[in-house]
Structures are given as C-alpha cells and as structure tokens.
Amino acid sequence: MGDSDREARLEALAAALIHRFNNVLMGIQPHVEVIKRAGKENERILGSASQIETALRRAKAITSEVSRLVRPMVLNVQPLAVGGWFESLRTDLQPFATAPVQLTFEAVPDLTIAGDRDQLTLAIVNLVTNAVEAMPNGGTVRVIARDVPAGIELQVADTGSGISPDMIGRAFEPLFTTKRNNAGLGLAAVRQIVEAHGGTVRLESTPAVGTTVTVALRRR
Image 1: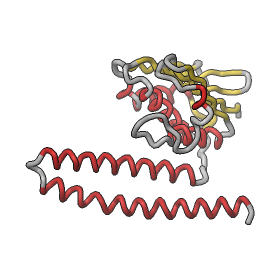
Image 2: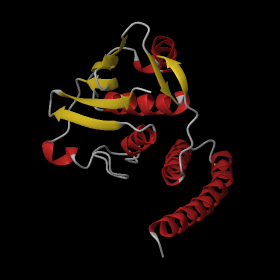
Image 3: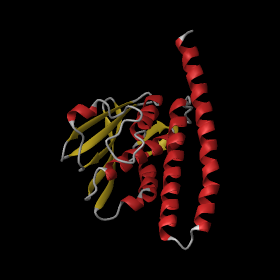
Image 4: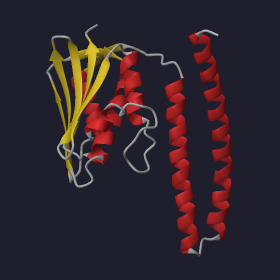
C-alpha cells in the first residue's frame, strides 16, 4: 500500500470516528436539558449541568479542529489588502483588547498579500488567543505585517509567560499543549494553514519575557 493510499484510509477512518463521536455528543445534550429542568431549584445540580455543557462545547471544538486537520485544505487565494483586513480583525478581536490586555495592529501602508482570507484570519485568531491565554495578568499583543526581501511576514508577539526551550520544538504538534483545558490544536492548525499557502512558521520564546510567532509567506 502506497503512502497516498494509507493517508486516504487514515483520513476516512478519522472522518468516520469524528462523525460517530459527534453523534454521541448530540445524544448527551437533551439529557442535560432534562437535568436542568428537574434540578432548577438546586444550585448544585444546575452547576453540574453547566459544567457538562462546558465540557460538551470543548469536545465539539476539538472534533471540529481534528476534522480540519485531517481534511485536505482547499484554498481560495485572492489579493488581500492587509490594512483593511487588520481593521476587520481589530473589530473581531475587540473582546481581547480590554485591560489588562493591550492588542495592537501594525502594517506597512498599502501592503497586499495573496491568500485565503478566511484561513489566514483563523490562523491569526488562533495565535492571538494563545497569546492572551499566556498573559493571565495582562500584557501586550502586537500583530505585525511587514514587507521583507523574501516575501511577507506576519507576526504575533506577546509579553506573556513564554515557552521553555525544551518545549518549543513540540509547540506545533497536534494535541500538544502546556495549558490546562486546552485541546492543543491551535498551533497545529496554524501550521497547516501556513504550509498550505506555501509558507513557513517559526516560534521564538523566552520564559517570563514573551513569545513571537512569525509566519513567512512567499511573494506571489
């Protein structure tokens, strides 16, 4: 069996497992509603039901991300004006831009890149989310776009807790995470999106100082 056949069979198996797991999750929610109605006068029961719903949302998010990782990515590449895109991102990420977190966007004027807007948006949102989670006591997250000799660079830099040197090499592995209650799929999805664009992604970090993730895209 060739590598392509093996990959196709693994993708089909993963899709089938995800479908069945989602069916299990869907079967749980109605029973949660029954518990909430039956225990509406009992704060302990309602609290437990709320915890179950939170776990269900996390499980659904995990299956959604796994599904993304195993599916071949089809890009809709179009010219993307970075200035307007960043303004849209600023609006979408406004909930993060409140004290004690400061979120800034910096772009070279009139910079245009070629890419799939939706997929690149997902990559930046994942990176900003990771950055904010690394700063429980607040800090600064900078989203930067610059023109470089080799092409275009997009950077997300934070002043958070950083990652230890022995963990940096594993940061983009699926399911790897150093955060509690985190699926560990955000950075793996970022790498998948960037590589589908023919680019590369690297992470530099210093514990207690911060982390910078740089996405390098070829000029098209």
